[in-house]
Amino acid sequence: MKLDALARDHFEHPRNAAGLFEPAPTVGTGVGGKVQSGTYVVFQIRVAAEGRIDAARWECMGAPAAIAAASWLSEQLEGCSPKRAREWTALSVGDALSLEPEALSALLPVEDALKAALDALDVE
Image (cartoon, rainbow, N blue to C red; front, side, top):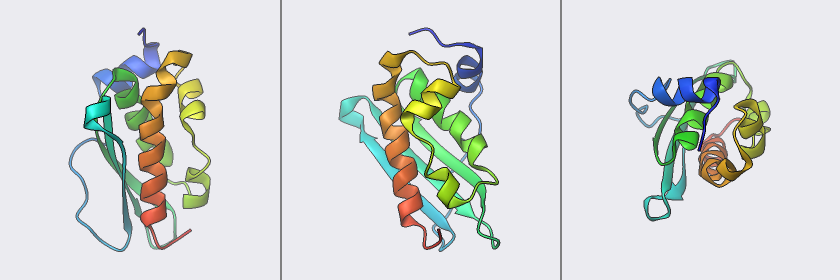
């Protein structure tokens, strides 16, 4: 699968993949996919006192498109409200990264992990 410049940059130089946060009330952790299925993602978001996401971290084993998506999405989430973060979908991330339609199945676990991380938070 061919990656356009933005997706390739995030795949080759992933952002915010350095270490997960310690468990805390302000940290939501979510998991998507399965190793056996080819894509496994852990996504974490941390919410600041004012209720906005101030940082995101992730780990991903899978296709280059999934790694690029997790990296790109982690940057987009900073400064967002949890409500706004829920609007991101596999399709919208794929469109933003100009990924081919075949990449959608690799992005679904990223979306699932993000939604699970948001669900794990006590804020909205």
